[in-house]
Length: 285
Image 1 (cartoon, helix red, strand yellow):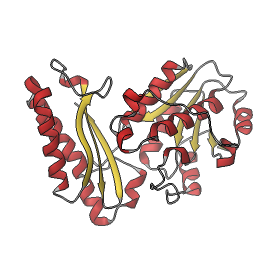
Image 2 (cartoon, one colour):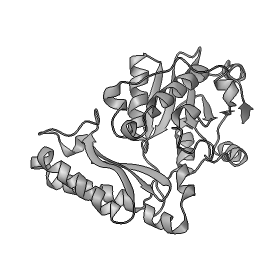
Image 3 (cartoon, one colour):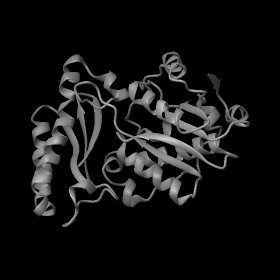
């Protein structure tokens, strides 16, 4: 596996290769990331992964400084997974000057849910993803990038970015990887204490219960959904969580469901803080 740090080095490493298959990460890799790499290997001629903790997508009070940096472990995992090229830029490599030009997603999507509780987050995500895409896919007639469904809204933002900028990149979604007990794998799970780790499964269980109740109320879902969502939040709060949202939305645009929307077109999404750790999850109905 070749390791490069600058954009010119990356482009040089890829100059004679065919279709890249790309997996962007912030490092601190787990089995979910490696599953994305495994899928990418079957989709392109050269498999590229990046590790970069992107300052632009962290709010001032969030965990940018403490976010785990585990480069040596990550490098070994990627090599074992069959990654061909690891792009590990320093901040000065990716942002050699202040990033005053930014990609601002459609507020109709990016101001909902995560965007409401993390203002500016999706601008940071879209900007760094565009920059990474330009580094990896420059000069290539086509490419593919693999993202996990756990970050459901982020996936939708990136698909919109690729579509509206007519980028020759196929976005492939990988189902959320889960631990044996059903907890969605996340780098932030490492922040959890032993007791919190046991409790953390309650977020996905709450979403399953909300999805079940939404399906049962399908005949009158728009009217009944606010009460169902409030009950789900209250039940989680009673266990010591601080919920931001537990909600059922349309997969197409993440707006509240309307009369006639079929269960197969909906998704339950949740975000809540357990202790000092904020976790997210989702479940397609």
